[in-house]
Length: 139
Length: 383
Image (cartoon, rainbow over the protein chains, first blue to last red):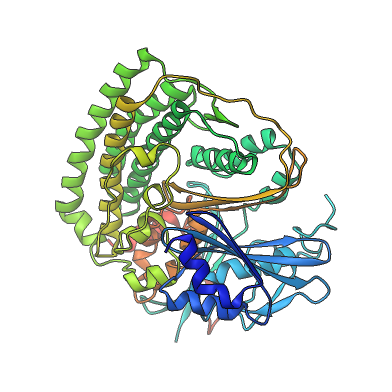
């Protein structure tokens, strides 16, 4: 799908959306509707999650889903409050997201409710020094 | 009753430690768990604490085998953040080095795969011929490893007219050798016995588990970033994407060897079409707030860099998703239902950057007794 077709598919579920060029689209949504966005995309036979990136914005944590839509790439952003960073898992919609969610969990301390295997992936089992990709983490 | 076989993380013979936990019932594997992070160096954090010029070299060190891919992907992401256009000649040089790197990486992998199935002669032959492409890389970039070919806004070094003859000669040798290896791989009894119908990944699983690169293409998934999300000079060079429908280890061998042949054609075409002109543009180190995602086709598959700039000469956040990481989820269906003897070749077949299996502990759950197998013993099991 081209970027404009992707935005057409998800326009009912997003807060704002932007077509960067023919091959790049960006959208942001909220916690209540973000699974609807992903379901709508899955309905159009989009099954490839390229990556899930967590970004510490200070008061909030942004989770960016980078979805391969054939001829374009969609960056879908959802914000979670840093005080209670949790959101439902998407591994039931995209099974390939399983490792990316584990990484965001341990690097930024975001909880994905319903994740099938929420163990550590990269950090040592006895790691107690907090979340390395948060802003307050010391060098 | 099931047994747990922990595989890894120690393996001095090959690169990059990882830990796998195989649950086996007799010889059959029923489940597998993965533990990564023994080499976690905090590079994403490191990149956001360094300037873009320093980051270019740090990003390259994410991987030794596909260093140009990271170098290129980082440079392209920064250029997209800064909205800088790269001269045409630089785009061609970037693609040529990327294809040379693909040949070297696939031949290196083919040698390792031959070693894993105990075909040592073939391993020697693959690595002998890989030296030809290493020579070409040294000729064009000055280095055999960590080429540092991309600069922000272009490339560091030009391909000079006196390089052309040597490049063409080297490619001819490589083409002849690879054509022979395609014949060997699809007809030799030993290879067929160890690779055919082994570690099968169905197209459905490959798509659902987001497999990338040759692993996905060997399962019939027609995805290639060079064609689907074009970059460098790939839009101007016609090439064929190697796709095999079978999904077994043999298909992954054939896809990679076909890609080597295709890479040779791409380099020839690029050398022919390459325009003259500058190889670099000026690049200002301060980049206004912006976001950019770039995907390229590294030898192992889709590589993604995602950068956020904030107006300074350092990025706010940098994300690098490597192809091997994307392929780990797809390992499970390849292993489940297979046997212990298949572990080394199936693990090697995704071309992990590279994997453990050097030390294997067999633990009997009921009695708690354990014994340690070396890689040598593990290789001897099938015999």
